[in-house]
Length: 194
Image 1 (tube, rainbow, N blue to C red):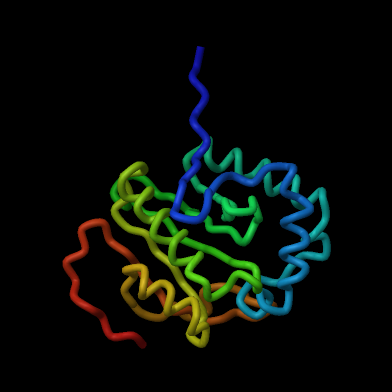
Image 2: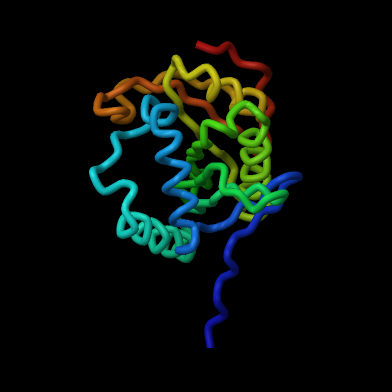
């Protein structure tokens, strides 16, 4: 009999980072809908069914498959004090072999921004990536003008590596992104931010 893989669950000082569950639909929809104007300038365009139950159910099933395949670790950020969903963080595109790397993505509800939650989540996920998943490199990218995202990455130990031209479609347009990385055994000094 095959043992079931453990579902990832990471505890931080104030949050539990865990896989999305079907029961998260209403809190997730409410948070995304209420933060739409705050989030949409930084994200790919939302599909017409983005906030539907069917779309969310597909998201839950994708998260379960991705974890079991070892290709991603999508986690919801749940504040323990009141069991409130406040955002999400995903270690995606996990590559094995000579790369041993993954790509970090994240979002937080507008009401919870700039309170240190995202830095707390990033530090915990990066620690897990290096210690539990044995990755060597965690990458992240954001729009050059996203000062908040750049700041949280830099305060979390990520270093600027350059610019990727037309990296992702954000809000309906191909956009350049600044690239950052955090290395398990980083001996680089501070890098100049572009």
